[in-house]
Length: 209
Image 1: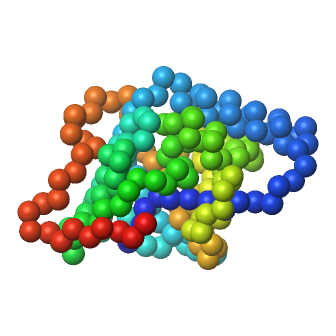
Image 2: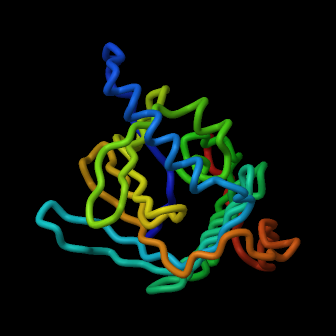
């Protein structure tokens, strides 16, 4: 499992056409609807890799919480326990099985979650385009304005004012999918939800930046 949600690849610059402008405006309209009065979000998620032949492998599930502008908490529950907490300054990854915590500075401005909870960051770091609608879901593509060594493309699947799905295609042409359900907008969250204190006795490893 050991997955987190981080993103994207710089595409070659193309001349801006009227269609490109219209697609960007349509994407921004959809995202504005999702962001409207949104300061926090909680949901259940299922994460899996989608193979070339359409099979779902390496499936995981759990709960996620987000709060504007840059706080989030991902709690993987099945099949393995793992916790990822971003407190605005650092990201903590706690692997209960290994009894290990990895901590690194929170500097990844290309995390697609910021597109939902931080318009300023998303406008600064992404080119955002409307792609198409399929089965009632509108798909918006994200491409970074700076090159990423990890991820090639990201798509957001939106239905009305809700995020239904995130698809991430990496440099190895592997596709990771996050499906969301039981979404609650602006829930009342505990004051310490986005803080993390390593449990006593676990190894704390500082990730190389």
